[in-house]
Image (cartoon, rainbow, N blue to C red):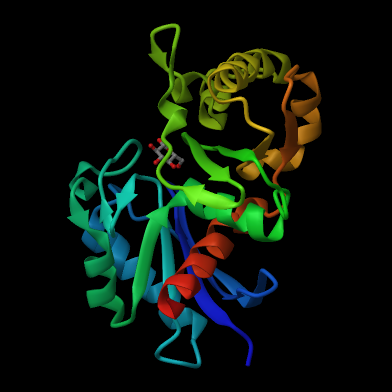
Amino acid sequence: MAKTAIGIDIGGTGIKGAIVDVKNGTLVGDRVRYETPAGGHPQDIAVVVAKVVRDLKPARATLPVGVCFPAVVQHGRTMSAANVSQEWIGLDADGLFEETLQRHVHVLNDADAAGVAEMKFGAGKKRKGLVLMTTLGTGIGTALFINGELVPNAELGHLEIDGVDYETKASFSAKERENLDWNQWAERLQKYYGTLEKLFSPDLIIVGGGISKQWEEFLPKLKLNAEILPAQKRNNAGILGAAALAWKHSDD
Ligand code: BGC
C-alpha cells in the first residue's frame, strides 16, 4: 500500500493542501488552495483547513495530517507570530486542528517543513554535514539540518544586521515593497547569507520560496564559500514536508 498523508501549508496569502505519497515525495491528485482569511485568526484558519481536507476527499479517516505554519512551533503549540495574528502565540495548534478535523494532526514551522522536503526529495537529498535551508517570501524562513536531522525552529530570518531585523530588508516582500532590482536585492542577500556563513559555516545553503524559480537572476551574483543551490520543490515544499513528518510521527 502507498504510504500517504495529507500536507497543508498555511501562508500569509494562501492555504494549500494535497495528499502526498511520502515515500517518493509526489502529490497524489490535485492540490487545493483557498485564500487565507483576512486577519489570520485561528478559528477562521481552522475552518479553511477543514475545507481543504474535505475537498481532498481522503479515502481513509485515519490518514495523518501535517500542517505547516509561519511561526515557532514547540510541541504542537505556536509560540510566535511574526507575520500572522498575535492570537497564535501560545495556542495549542495541534489541539485546535485535531478538534476541527477529528484526525491526528502534526503542526510544524513552515521553513522546517520546506527543509524536510528538500532534504528528503530535493536539493539536499543525501547531503551530510550542516545544511541551511532558507525560504524567501513574506518573511525569511530558515531550517537547520545536521547530517540530515532537523534542528527545529531556527529563526534566523530575524537575524539582526545593521541594527535591523533583516527579514524586513532581504525577504522577497522587501524586494517588492521597495521596488528593488535584482542587483539591489542581491546586495542585501549577500549581506544576509554572508553573515549566516560567518556564524554557522554551513556546507550547503538551499534557497527556496516561490521566487527561487527565478534563481538565475540573483543566486549567481552571490559570493560565498558554501555551496548555494535553488530549492527543487518550491511551492510544494511545505506540503510535502508537513505530510512526510505527519506520517513519521503517526508511525512512531
Ligand atoms: C517567522 C518564521 C517563518 C518565516 C517564513 C518568519 O517571520 O518568524 O517562523 O518560518 O517567517 O514564513
